Length: 410
Image (tube, rainbow, N blue to C red; front, side, top):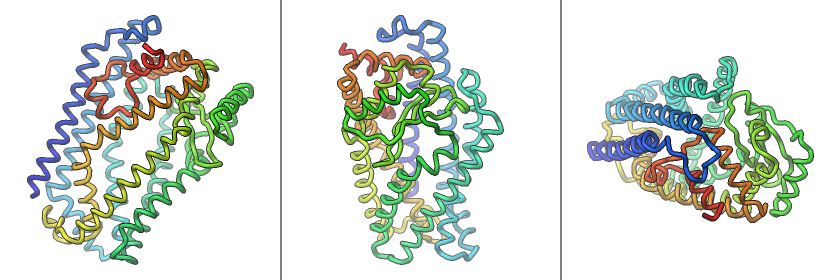
C-alpha cells in the first residue's frame, strides 16, 4: 500500500513539474511577441523584462517545489515521520499538548525550510526587477510578527481541535468542522482591526473627491462601505493592488498607495467596481459554502477512515496517535484532491469574468477597465503568454490578454 501511495504522489508531482516546465518554455518561446491588445502600450524592452521576470520566478518556483517534494518524500516515506512521532510520544505530555506541539513544530520546520527561497525571491529577483523596497530590518520585523501570529493561530486551532476530540470522541468531526467555520468568520471580522495593522499603516484616503466617487459607485452597486483606506504597501514592494476586507458592517475598501500613483480616477473606479462585482454576485459566499461543504464531507470521511483503517501501519509508524493519523489523512487528501485543482481554478475564473462584466456595466466605461488591466500588468510584469494548460490548472484569473479582449468585446 505504501508503494501505491508513493507512486500516486510521484505521479501528481511529476505532472505539476511538467506544467511548470511547459509554462517556462512558453515564456521563452513567445515572450518577445507583443499581444494585439497591448500594441502601443508596451515596448520591446519592457516585454523582454516581463519575460525574464516570469522565467526567473517560475524557475525558482520549480526548484522550490522539487525541494519541498523531496522533503515530503523523506518525511513520509523515509521513516522520519515515525521518528518524529515516537519522540513526541516519549515526552509523555498531555494529549492536547502533544497534538498541538506535533503540528506547531511541523509549521515551524516548513517555515524555516522555505526561508532561503523567500529571501532569494525578495532580495534577489524582486530587487533585480525594481519591485523590492523592503529593508532587512523590516523583513526581520515581519518574520517575527508572522511567527508570533502563526503560533497564536495554530496554537488556538490545534488546542481546540484536540480538546473537542477528547470531549466528544464519537462526533468530534462535526464539532471540529463547526469550530473552523466559526473561527474563519471570526478572523474575517477582526482581521481589518487586529491583524492587518500589524504589518501596514492604514489611513483614510487622502483624496476626498475620489473617496466620494468610490462611495457613490458602491451605493450604485447596492453596497454599503464603512471606510475607504489607503495602505503604505510601497514600503515593502512596488507591486500594486486594491481589495475589499472584512465582512458585514466592517467591510471596507483598501487601496495600495502604489495603485493610486499608477492609475487614473476612472481606472481606479473600474478596479473597485470589479471587486464590488464579487460581493454583488455573492462569489465570496459561494466560495465559502463550497469550501465548507468539501470540508464537511472530508472531515466525516476522515473520521470514518480513522475508525476503520490502520493508516499508521501503512507508513510503518509504531505509535498510533490521532495526530499522526490526521497528518497522514491530510497528506493523502492532497494527492486525491489534485484533480479538483483545475475545477476550482475554472470556477474562480468564471467568477472573475462575471466581475469584469459587472464592472463594465456598473461604470459604463469598459475601456477604463481594459486600460487599468494593461497598466497593472505592465507595472507588475505579469506574464502575457502563460501556457494554456498551465493556466487552466492554476490560474484563478483568466489570462490578462484574454480579459482585455473580452472586456473590449473583440
